Every structure is written in structure tokens, then in C-alpha cells.
Image 1 (cartoon, rainbow over the protein chains, first blue to last red):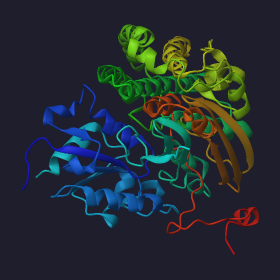
Image 2: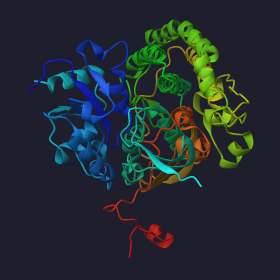
Image 3: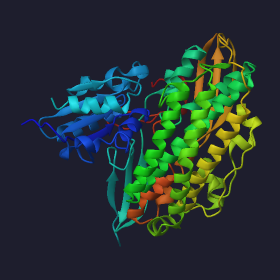
Image 4: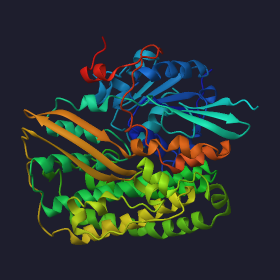
Length: 130
Length: 384
């Protein structure tokens, strides 16, 4: 079963610098207003259609991310946001780096940027529905 | 004999924007003990900063925190320019202050929004976020970036703010001022906010002094440790600044201190825009090579004193130590929530304004097994 509209989104910060977190949060503000697309930020991954992941995945976070991914409802869609989630960014060679995200869980859409603008984050989430 | 039970919050939780694992030991609804389990946002920032040229290290320093990128730049540059004896022109000094103060405004508005969200007042959350978005527009106009501003280099800035840029900043501040005054009035007089904040998370002046708290948390306890006042740096030497102080030391006092600081920052930006030398441009090239030296420097981040130690050997950074304000304040978190009702915990934790991501330093994780390192092993950096 696929959906066309109104994806519910769960958000997980897997060890980012807050930059991408803020831009995801900015998507909910009155200017970008993701409610236009029926997008709602949900607390639990069990209620969500799309999981949004930001940040390098560090070693302590890895099992949490897998845990959250397992809870996600089928079909599982994951949007990785920001340079850190895509490749590790400037923390690529860091001792704490266990990612990038697509090494741990399958990713549907990648949104590059440090951090990406809210417009591209919204586009990425909608793209994941296709 | 009552038994306590564990109430876990996090690391993924809707009210936490950052991964933090909060273990509350509760008896009924009273918090008996609290443990903050960290390490979920550890990225190895300091390790990443070793063995880099100063310009490259600056790039990484700015990416320590997404909320207070400029204050890390300021502290790092203050340290490097201090020991390398680099003079910066007035224009560069004031440009840095403008970005730093706008950052304080955006940080406090974001915080106020999330705080209102914790209190269940989502309309106010949206109002604060709406005003904050306009500040991000100013960043976009001035520096070209919304979050990581990256506007400075050693001894210079990447661009000269034009007259139109500064006018845009001033007119934006003017346009949000009236709204913010009315929101502040609401926060001060709203029954729900007053009932849930007054007397909650009380920190006495004595405790604040003993634990060495910094920033608005300390200023709400009537301790003035504002770096901008005590040891002015860069453009702050040219500006007139009042510290916002309160005496109550509870969550409501901290809220009002931050909101009043927004107006003080607006005042500083206006002063800086008016004082900025006309016509002078910033030096075209940064100071390229800094070969040797070490020093310390501090800047006032939105959350308090941000302290940097930088050591450069043979043109490369040998050690960069960052002590961010949340690290100084974190010691008070378990004390502040002890004895509180569990429903007040989000409000109390939020009122202390944690910024976990820039604070995470050491995390030794090996397949969930605990491990003990002696001081000798830590110093050597390897375990026998």
C-alpha cells in the first residue's frame, strides 16, 4: 500500500550539530508550514510513514537507529538529511562515526546540504512518497 | 517503604530536539533521582580539530553547533588573534558583533518557542518561530547562510556588509520588535505560564556560585558573569551594554532574562550598525600563516561563557579544547529536577536550555560493556 498525501513524519537526530534539526523544525513554522501537505511530525516511529534522520550515526546511536527503523510502519521510507547523514561530512574519519545512514538502514531519499534549506527538506519528504 | 521506579525519556523523544537519555527515578509522581545519560551526539569534535591549519580548523569549529556557530568562531578567533597579535579593523570587529547578537536573538527566540511548546502553548511557539524566521532572512542577506554563518576569517571577514544589508537588518528588527513586546507581556502575565514556571526548578544564588553556572541561568540568580561586560572583546569594546539580571532564580526568571536579552541584543545591533565606519572595507586576504603559539579565549554564547584553548605547533593545531556553556551548567540539571513533580521536568530541563550537541566530549562505547580507564592510560591515549 502506498500513500500519495499526508505523510506522518518521525524525526531522529543521530548525533548531528543541531543545524539540520533546526531546519527540520523550521519546516513546521508558519512560513514553510508543512501542514499544507498534510505532513505532521509524530513522536513515535510506530505512527510514522517517513523517518527523517540527521547527523552522523555515532557508535552509541547505531543500535537506537536500528531499533527505531524496526518500529517504523511498512512500507518503510527513510529520508537522510544533511552532509553528515549522507557521507559523514567533516566527521567522516572521526572515531565515533559508525555511519553513514545508508550503511545501517536502507535510505529512500538523500537531501544534501550543510544544512539543507527547509524547501529541499520538504521536497525530499514528498519525494519519498513516490 | 516506597520503591522508586525508572522512568526513561529519550534518546528519541518529541520534546527533545537532541539525543539525550534522561533517566528519572520516581516515587509516585515525585522525582527522587535523575541521571543524564549522554554520548548520543558525540562526534569527536576536538579530535577532528587536531592537525589542521588554522583556517581549516575554523571551518570545523563553526560546525560544532548549529545554534551558536558564530560564538564558536568568535572565541576561536579571539584566542588565535590574541596570541598571534593580529589587529582587526573596527569594521570587522563590529560586523562580527552584529552576526553574534543576531545569533543570540535567534537562539533565544527558538528557545522561547520550544519552552512555550513544552508548556502546551503551541500558538506562542508558532509566533516565536515566525519572528525567528525573519532573523534567519537577515543572516541569509548578511552572510549568505542561514545556519552556519561562516562569515569570518583570521584577521578579516569574508564580505563587507553593504549599507542596504545593514538597513535590511535594522528594518527587520524594527518590524519584529512590536510583536515581541506583546509576547513578552503575555509570558509575564499568562496564568498558565506563571503557575507552571514560578518557583519551579529553583536554583539559589549560593548553589549557582558553588556549581559555577554561566549565562542566563546564572544571571537569573543575580550573578553577573557576562563575558561581554567582564572582559569585552572585538566590537563589544565600542558598545554600551546592560546586563539583564533577576533575583528569583526560578524557571520564570530564566524565561524573562532571555526575553529581555533579546531586546538588549537588538539595541546592540542598532548601536553597531550606527557606529560601523562608513566606506571602509575589510582586508582582502586573511592572515595566512600562524606558526606557533597557544592561548585561551572566551566569548559569550547565547547560553553563557564559551571557552576555547588553542595550541598551534608548526603551523598546525596541536590541541583545541572547547568548553561550551551547557557543560558548565549540566552539573546542575539533576539537582534542579530532584524533588520536582514529573510533569514539571520538561519545563525545568528546558528552562536550563541544554545544547547537547556541542557539549559531548568523551564517550567510550565498546559493545555496551563498561570499561575503566586510569588517568595514566587516558594521558597516553591507549589502554594496556
